[in-house]
Image (cartoon, rainbow, N blue to C red; front, side, top):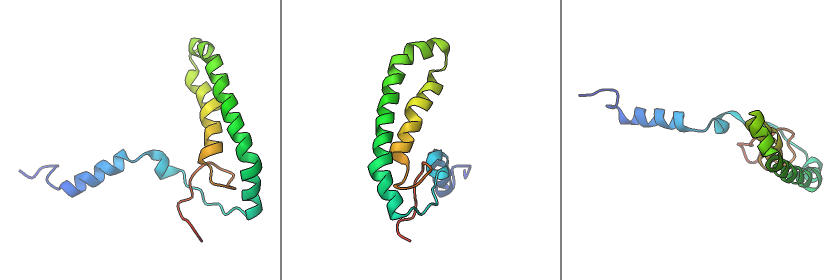
Length: 106
């Protein structure tokens, strides 16, 4: 009676591996920005990114009827909303690429 589900630990591990989001597995950042770069990111780049995110979201809503008619609403949303949101909210402070730093400290 011991079939594929007989070893429940292996089954649970495989289910967790499949269910884990790909973004958690793939997008890790290995940068070590300086303090000056972090400050300029905090005071200049992040506010600009948040403004661009807001403008992109507003533009997406206004152009949604046209992009739905053209069949490219997903691509428009990716470029106008998702990419600016990644730059503003997912990028580590001072880093140049969106992603997460997994290790805290040295």
